[in-house]
Image 1 (cartoon, rainbow, N blue to C red):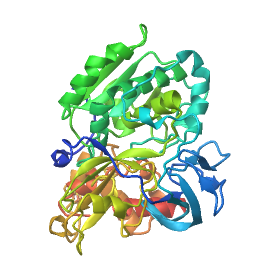
Image 2: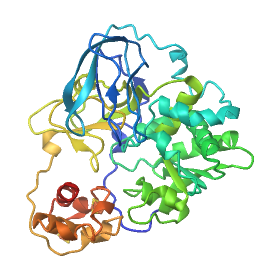
Image 3: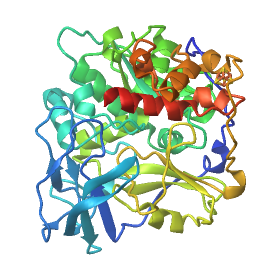
Image 4: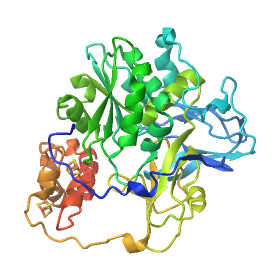
Length: 445
Ligand code: SF4
Ligand code: SF4
């Protein structure tokens, strides 16, 4: 079994709460809020105005910058506002608000009756030259959480030779099961998406990496791999150890290929490209079905949720509407987290929308939220031991607390992926990641 060579932790998996729930289509929302910044890179500019009528899948915002991804309307209706709204990942962001008319009329060239099938049409690989542009035009970004524009990731400079594709199905975050359900229910779409990426980059070697806590997904994809592999370019399954953060890009590359991405560099430096399984399926849909990225699977789970599940949700759907459907038992002291417990962000307002990178909504009941006082460092070294990036988290936090920002870069501050392993392992409950985040902000400032 494959795994990365440094650090890692084993938090309780908690996936059983939603793992058995098949993907269910959430009702078309009456209103959507589409932030102009929901990907890594430059925000988009609106190309519609208040009062415009839009169809589902219509382009409504774009940017000329290379690292950006266009945004499409996820419902049919009228643009009622373009204004600052709450964002799930931070401060308020300019957003396009659309009120639906209930018709869900798609743009020309898209057949929604094909969406819920697994790879219903073949891909014409002779048109591979157009694939990159189609992926960009469909607004595809990484669905694993980072939301990096996919077309850019698939455009390495000519001097970077890519020889390995890793399709990331590790889903190492506790609680989350969206990728797991996509692997079980859309395996052919994932494999078609994998072939498309291989054709774009001319890669002869692809792995679908899955943690060993998902044996049924491993078995299913393993059975289908041969069907979708080209004769000289096999797709294989890489079974990885269940260990957090196995799905981190650099950790997964190390686990699958043994290569180490140097500090401050990207996976292409060691000849690798990593794409999430959901992204691979979305790439297939963009190429074969002309479908822009207007919906995604979101896990809704946690002890404050009465009806946990994996929902296919239109981007822009307001969190409160989803929680109501999932019988959220709201109470003072609950924690609502967009994403998983290790890397997700707690939100204060439930009117935040689902964005392209929202993989889950975790609602923890107040009785399960441990607000523990932090104590002085015990110098036990646990945080150093578990850091998958080989950093010294206690020092990074201490230097930030003492406002000694000068040395932070030398100490590898920017290599911190904010995985939370150090804070999870710390017996003194030091708020290590929180301090490291402050340090990053100060250094950037
Ligand atoms: S949050 Fe940063 S410092 Fe802490 S374990 Fe993860 S990578 Fe290391
Ligand atoms: S794990 Fe906590 S107590 Fe131990 S060295 Fe790190 S910061 Fe200090």
